[in-house]
Length: 420
Picture 1 (cartoon, one colour):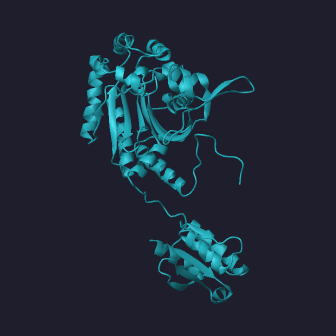
Picture 2: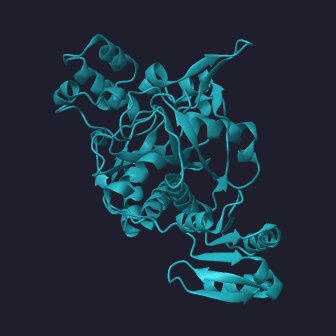
Picture 3: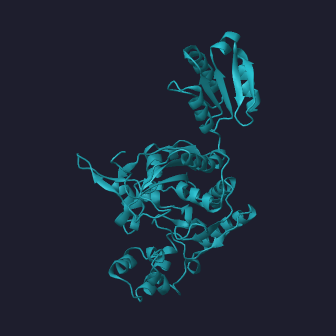
């Protein structure tokens, strides 16, 4: 047994569970492809400043959770704690916003890293699928992304998820709300770190999960009461588009999420079967992020959905996905000549689109048939010297036990026909 184990707060994806994760990623990605989003992949680490500027100096992600390292050349790097800043950096670096019509639509999938206290649904290494629409300010774009996420969840069969919706205003109305919130928060009994946060970014205090803080937030001023007319109109348009598309949502005036770059539309998906770690995904509009990281004004919107928590949500609802079988045909050779012939047949079957495997290692008939049954295959192909002399293979249905000879040159077509 190996003396090494996966680091604390991480996990290994292994068959058969890994097939569920792959199916979830594919289900989330499929609506995005249909809506014109192209795939992008960024490095697993970036310059620390990218996240400290974009995500926010006062966020827990930057101050407490980010993995940082110093290279031999003295560069300060961080393992990516989220995807938006990296994707926007890559788009700016490649000048994608200059290549054609805006918005630039991108989707991505990958691993992210945060130093958190591990528990079910919260890991130090986790998987997300995300989408970003860069360079356009349009409530229809906000609604589009939310609808695509809902469609992805529905395609997986999920029902017990809820969409929480809020607006965080813009550069006109946010300062007014910030001042009102600070006045309220300064009168509360808060610890020194939280008081410091009140002065740097008071919205972060609303996101504090501690019960002692939440109790004091009753009666706090709400953003919806301080929105300017433009933000009110924008938010109402998003709500109208969602309603017209049959998307149910709940207005949550305290929803701020854990990143500083959000403006206007902010949303979160929660699942009622996951306990304290109920958020399965979320996002919003981030109209000023491009300028924060040195780019031009590019109003944008996006989201990230957690693959890990989506899998937990499926388990909570008792949903088993209809996954493709890993093996449909299992070949069992009896003798060296049969090994040569059947290996060629297996290669043909795979090229014909069937999942086929082979009894490697020179197993006898009994052990090879046990392997065939364990593989989950529907059919076994068995061949010995006599079969080859007659130009046939024995095709055995592992469900019914029925076995029939099939001409060697017709076996691929026969299995394709039975496969349907």
